[in-house]
Length: 485
Image (cartoon, rainbow, N blue to C red; front, side, top):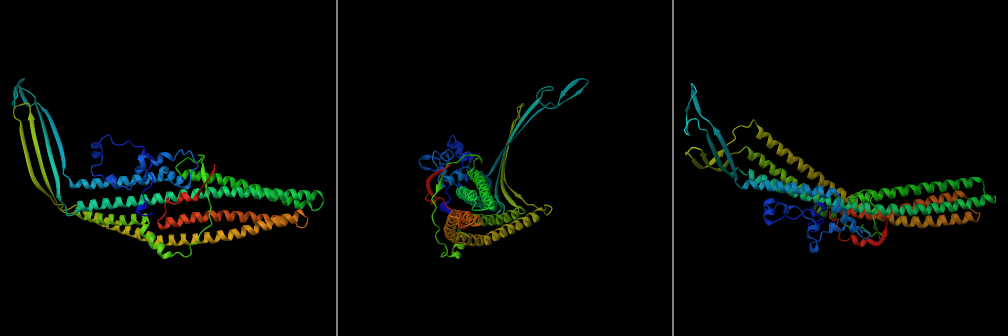
C-alpha cells in the first residue's frame, strides 16, 4: 500500500467522538496540531460529511467484498489499537516541541505567625502589630525558565519523537493491510467451506443412489450381501463428510465475523463472489516485484523510521551530559498584615554543568547506541524477509494457478468415471468396488477444485500484501450480488 492508498475508513470510536465545542478548546487541546500528523482514515473525509463507518455495521443489503473490508477496517480492534498507538506518539512529539517554549511557574507561600515572649505572665511583643498581635504574610513568586542552548539535546529529542511518530504511522498502515487481508481471506474461506458443503451433499446423494442400486440387485439375487454392506459404508462415510463440512462452514462464518469486529455468532448476509479463471502470472519479473515491495511496504518504512529515531536518541543521551544555558527570571511580592510590603525581581542567565553523575551518562549513551544497533538489525531482518515473502507468494500464486487448471481436468475425468461406473453397476456389468473407487475419486476431485478456486483468490491477495499494494479499489468487481445467508 503506497501513500496514495492509505486513506481508509475512520474507526468507529473516533467517529463517535463529539467535535470540540469551540476553536479555543481545540487549540488548547492540541496547540502544536500534532494530531494532524497521524495518518487519517477516509471516514473523516467522507462526502457530504458522511462517515462510512456508520453505514456498515447494520447494512440493509448483502455485503460485497468491499463492504466486508470496510467493516473490518472500521470495527476490528486491531485497527483502533494501532491508531491509538500513533496518537500516543503524536502527543510525545508535542511534548518534545514544548522544550522550545519557556516554562512559567507561580509559587505562593502563606504564613501566619505570632512572635512574643512572656515573663511573669507579662507579654512583650518582639515584632510590630501590637502586643502579641499575629502577623500574616502572603508571598507569591512568579518564575520563568527558558532553555537557550543544550548542545543539540532539544533538537535530538524532537527528531526522535518525530521519527517515532513516523514509525507509528507506518505501523498503523501495516496493521490496516493485515486486517484487510484477514478479512479477504476469511471472506473467501467462508464461500470455499460452503462450496464444500454443497459438494459433500452431491457425494452423499450419489452414495445413496449407489446404496439403493445395491439393495435392488441384492433383492433379485444378482449380488452378495457384501455389496450392500460396502454401499452402506460408503453412504455413512459420505454423511460424516457432509456433517464435518457443515461444521467447518459454521467455523468459517465465525472467523469472518471475528475479522469484522463482530461476535462469532453474528448472522451475516454476504454477497457471493463471481469466480473467474485465474490469469497467468509467470511472465512477471519477480525481481521487480521485490524492488517494488521494498519501496511500498509500510512495515519496512516503519523500521527505517525506528532506526532514525534510535540514532536521534544517541544524540539525546550525549547532550544530557553536556552543559545547558537558560534564561531565568522571577518576580516576588510579599504582603504582610503590617505595613511592610516588599517586592523584588531578577533576570539572569543560568549555566548548568553536570560534573559527575556516577557514570550515568556514560551508560545512557551506551544503551542508546545498542538500541540503535537493535533497530538496524531489525530493519535488516525485515528487509531480507520481504524478498522471501514476495518470492514465496509469487510461487504460491503460480502453483494455485496451475493447480486450478489441473483440478478442472481432474474433475471432468472423475465425473465421467463415476457416471460410467454407476451406469455399469445398474446394468449389472460392474461391481460395487468400481463405484466406491469412482465416487471417492470424484469427492476428492470436487474438493480439490473448490480449494483451487479460492486458493488462487487468496494467494493473489497474499502477493499484493507482500508487495504492499493490497487495495480496496478493485474489490467490488469480485462480487456478483448473489446473497448467501
